[in-house]
Image 1 (spheres, rainbow, N blue to C red):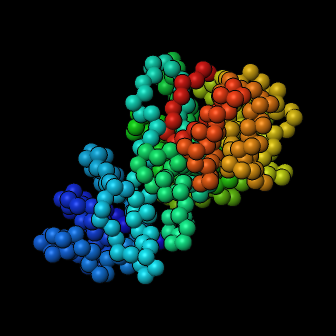
Image 2: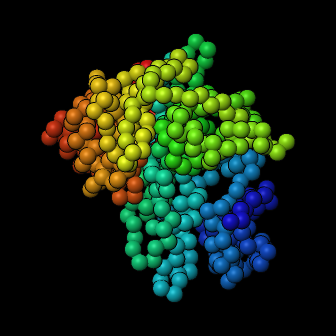
Length: 408
């Protein structure tokens, strides 16, 4: 699909517009300038009416807007927020009375403004930041936002600013202050990682990625490795990657040019990654001890969780082998997979099974992650609150941008 590069002239036009219909029109005209460009004094601009050819061209570009770093800086500087969720101006309805444009544009332009950005921890306090808490496809789903026959409540909510149902690929970042400075250790870099980083790295004052630890070799865990080039080209010389042998073999195929850089065309700037093979034995990264937690992620497919300090992180699991349970004893914080509210799938725990595992493992606190669009944050949270009252188990849903102090 083609991508749209927003120029400074485009931004200027965008900032000058007042009504939301005009702002939508501005984006549409940027996408379809070859067919139509509304002059400043045009009657369409004055009345906020959409010209006839714009909507057709806009659909080709929505969701593929590519912003230059300079343009991005201008957006960040202006802190522009487009209140599409609360505006009476609407787009022309289709013949069947439904226009998916508003939902799609809202999802594209608004990010999850949640998290706890204003929370301050002491400079020497280790913490974890949830870079993403969703499934491989993320929330909202495009198929839900464009469905004229059925409204998906969770995906619709996820388009609202700050809504905790908006979720990108499951990943956490461990921020570890040490004598040589603060280290940022990432667990998994999936397809949407760069989008997560664009939001949470500036918000939390993050810059470097000092290591990446891989749980398994599915796209939602390694699909963002190529995007690490922004760091190795502009921030730091290289990034260490810690990966199990089986997953490294997969990377040799999916990211062959990152594993064997001799095949790269001279002058091309790809990610500079240093691969370190780990087995199911404890290893140390920047003075933090990680103990692998082997689990099954579907039949005969091994995935790794990790224990660091008294935190146990298991993002993708359909079954826990007996030999892994002793490694989960005396866990202060358990972060675990819970895909859907009603049942498990062949590759993931559902909420009932995840709760059974919590009762068995008995951590002090549990946060669920890896949730699909059937998991409504508010509704499931209400249910989990009742469990706290009836069973005394502290179980909650995580959300993108959540940060927590931890002991390492």
